[in-house]
Image 1 (spheres, rainbow, N blue to C red):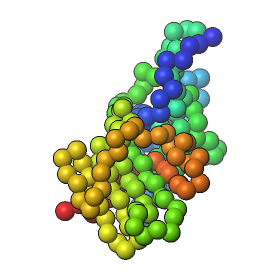
Image 2 (image 1 turned 180 degrees about the horizontal axis):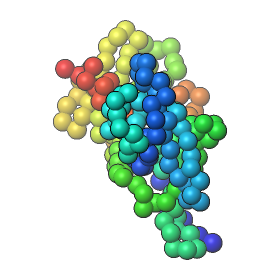
Image 3 (image 1 turned 90 degrees about the horizontal axis):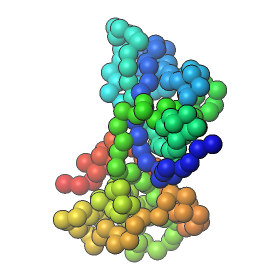
Length: 207
């Protein structure tokens, strides 16, 4: 028996153990793990840049602690009064375990940080060059846009913040729909991106 506390999708960071460097050639690959709520060790092999706060080379003294960015799918309290989280490691970095899995239930007290922001990258499928073909947004906890970039076919890039607007790009007035709702419209293809990816896009296009 359990009751649902929250089904709001959000980006979180969960603790991991970095076990070994498996390939030192660029960009570097590491084996890392965490345990699910039943104590099962889940093993991953992934690129070093995927792991937060991770600077590993052949001289590193392993194992080390690290964090993995993923999404919280839901949260609940079980019959033993434990806070449980279902997480999906496939978003935003496409991380899957060595067994090909990406959905896990973990101890909710293990969360390192919770981000009150999410970031999405949306392709708009249309043939009208008057409108942008790509929209990248930073979204707050209330689902309202905080920052936005719009990319046009001719190379023009508009952007908006709460204080600034370029090329008539404006923040939306209404909350942004969930990524599932966006993708239910065949005009759009939306995906989550990480905060780091958003910052790189922003820095590359905003002067």
